[in-house]
Image (cartoon, rainbow, N blue to C red; front, side):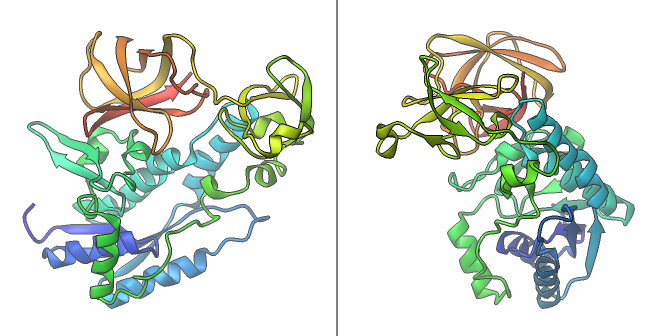
Amino acid sequence: MKQGKTIFVGLSGGVDSSVAALRLKQQGHTVVGVFIKVWHPDFMVCNWEQERLDAMRVAAHLEIPFLTCDAEAAYRDEVASYFVSEYLAGRTPNPDVMCNQHVKFGHFLQFAKERGADYIATGHYARRVDGEHIPELHRGIDTNKDQSYFLWTLSKEQLAYTLFPVGDTPKEQIRHEAMRAKIPVAAKRDSQGICFLGHVDIKEFLSHYTTLVTGPVLNTDGETVGTHSGALIYTLGQRHGFSLSIEESKTVPHYVVAKDVTANTITVSKTPPQETSEHKLYLVNTVLREPITTGDTLDIQIRYRQKPITVTVQKHSSTEVTLTVPARTDIAASGQSCVLYQGTLCIGGGIIQ
């Protein structure tokens, strides 16, 4: 990319986005640091002022302009409302995916374009690779930090305006680079900020929007073996957050293998939930940045940092994809993101029906 581009960098107050801004400035671009202010409910403590102050300190250290993008309404309406409605419907939401789609690469991108930016950049561990016809989204080099899973919704147009300056480098090296440059947040721990719904206590949060009723925990024979805090808040594969009355629960982990929101029950087993035979996975609201054909073999992830699963495309349209998935695959919960890969190339994904 030619020097002299105007690039708005989403500065979160953390080390990754700080090094992203540092690198772009060193490459000769006009860099503007932007703190994206998101919504948080009144009943929760949020340290956004400190995060914004950290981002401002980074911008001052790098001698770049600093702006604040008010994305409260977008976050409340597109992320928080979705989060609550999905849980109330008995599905498993992914707020990080929706935040990327509607806030960072939606509202923030529009904010930047209106102010003359050529690109936006973030500290995500992913790679943009310019293909023959369009930019491609690839996994980050650091396999432990790769965040392409959370970026599957990006359209070709959004990706064309986006840069990921740290995705080609391991996290440890990024932190060393920040220390060498004396960036103020170089030693700061990775964010676990409560402002982002993916990190809040689900039970405490949802209790402000619905009445959570305790109910029975069942074993696979239908016998009551404990109690839970409300079937709405559990995800398939979860192994905590419920109480068991059986002695072996003290030494043997038990996993949620089914839930019935209407009856307000969850079922647990000593064996993680897996499909016993080949089955079909139905995806809706799909985004496909590359063409696929019936019979194609792809890799999928239905959870972050999950080992990829090889599947076959059974049929597809512009908004739906049906996949044939092998036996002994983790059971996918309705509402989860299923992300599609060809090697390191993330071609898109969809929502599990």
